[in-house]
Image 1: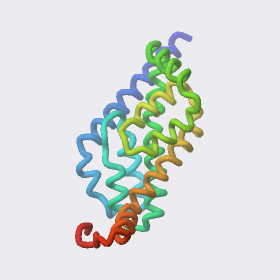
Image 2 (image 1 turned 30 degrees about the vertical axis):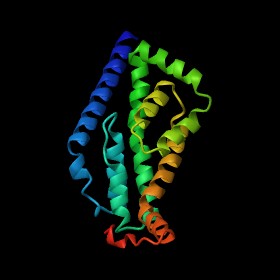
Image 3 (image 1 turned 180 degrees about the horizontal axis):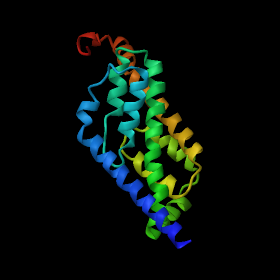
Length: 190
């Protein structure tokens, strides 16, 4: 039984090393990732996955979606970007799930936070909706507290979808606001 535990621990450490390496690699090449608005819907989904798979390092998934929305159907862009982004956030969730096994301190912190939060799914939804880099903490925390992965994914997807809808339709929203105030934004926005 002890050999099985050592093998499991080695697998968990390897997973953490891979997540960190993926995060650093994506962070280092974030400029190239952001310049690919002609990749198609599947490519967009993959790029948003990669941008959100970085744990605690910012990557440009919102910029990718917004730039693709200029040349592709904004609704489909929002759907693909939200799905890829939510899948990418599962990397942080897995890190938290693994980190809980590796560190009793993390487990204690996760339990303290869990006692403070009344509705975990609402918290995940709201943090996914906000354009702040706080969501990685939520993913790691949810994994560490063993929140159901499908529920986590669905709450994350719902928040990311609303956020992506706003960002992909931002030009239309600005144009509407400009018309309301008598300002022609077509000269300002390409």
